[in-house]
Image 1: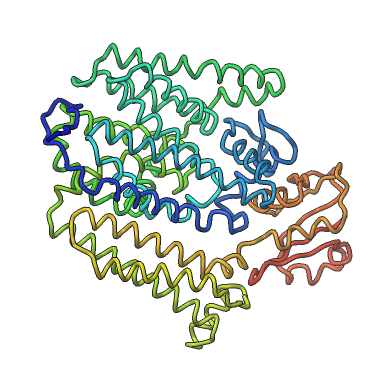
Image 2: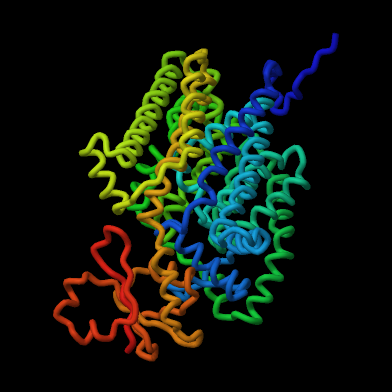
Length: 540
């Protein structure tokens, strides 16, 4: 009889884990990730405000061919490269039969795959076989990723860069050369997605780990140096081309803005409590049980050092956003996966039943809202749904209803046959968040699109035949609207530019009722459902 033992990476003589059912667990992770990521990824228009910035830059690349230094239509500024939008444009060119925004979003699958592989391999290096899958399930089940993973935002590329760098540090002791190459790849993605400020946490993490007793100082410094050198060739070429064609952009890239604020600490700390759920309670439990081993084990100090330095990066940025919290999730998920097997049965049961109840309730609300909108019963809810959907007139899609019922049946059967274990609490959370997302995409997306699809009005601007060399000016239009109009029309919109022959405005119809001059010069007008204001284009 043969016995297969796990290699004792950390030298702490841990008992090898059983391999029973490992293939089934891998299959569950793959199926869960595929369903959760693909549904809703390419079936909606650019959403404001989350996607407007990235799609504005994407339009500059896709339609104008500006790869080196693309900028927002609303703000002519440049502080970092845009490798995320470039990859999106490549996907849009290849998958030409889809709308550009839908094809570009498919690039998320590549970024998330890199992230998940890095998280899984990191946890295998730090804790051993079997923990990688659990950390990925916890990561994907995070509430904060519910909408974010299905949107086009460059924060997803930064997430991949952070995950790869985390894996490179975990691998640096065993395979230093390979790890330095991975760190170089992470730096290339990070510098071309975040800017020069991305170097702050990487250098800080390296310096912190080098002084810890269980990290080899010399090896850590050499590994970091080789990583910086391996990224220098590619980044050097990009900087050289930038200096030739966009010297002003190079100056801005080399002068990152740092704006430390104590208000940012409170903002990010409070939002992390829900953004990283259900990893938060598991992370806190791990912190209490393993904090005493901080100086002893890499599995404890590496994720915590990463969290500390990237949290510092967040509070030093001038713009705050909940989406930026994504960079902390890989390290939090890795720490949280430790406590799954050691969590007390009562605590795991509470987490399990909380997930079951909350996702069952949300699914019930989604079905009731859809039924009320489609059939008018109950009438009070029907009235509210009609208002929220922007007077949307639903059409029954029996295929979508059938799929939604299948997922509902799978959820009920899984709960019926559920054997309560510590790991099943995480698995049920993954099933629940998948059920809610799939139900939302199948039943609610048409009404959500009716309220958020600005393409239905902005595409009509092309009917007034604005010359390609002409610009529009505005003094009251929100930046996100400027970016969306540019994406759908490629019209140059400038702020308070008197040289433009056209003006675009967003006004309440009551404010122009006593302005006959404005009314007589209107060339085009468009209004979103239930929007109190109307978009106008006038000729100056």
